[in-house]
Amino acid sequence: MDDALRAAARATLEAERDRLRAELAQEIESPGPMTYGSQAAAATQVFEQQRDLALRDRAQQHFAQVEAALARLDDGRFGICLRCRQPIAEERLAALPWAASCISCQQIVDREGR
Image (tube, rainbow, N blue to C red; front, top):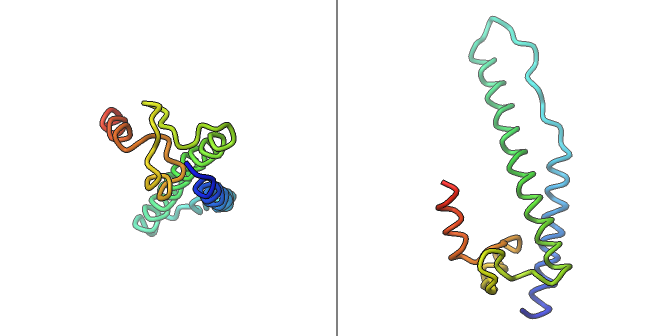
């Protein structure tokens, strides 16, 4: 893997890390006091809070992937599949610089996770 791809990956990863930090710093609005006049409004508030919590959980997982990719860049393991130890395609890394697995191994991991 050439230095230009590593530099581009680092810039993308650092920008993504900054974006995720800002997203995770935002408060999740808790539902206000429930009133008995509108069950639909109360259900909407609960749904929105659950959605926001799920999005925050996903952002935290993605943040961990980005941090791990930056660590792999720093220690020289970036671009090597964690499962099979073969190089990850440069096209995949250009699209998803936080990818930790080659496409073949990711398909296996996805099937096992279901």
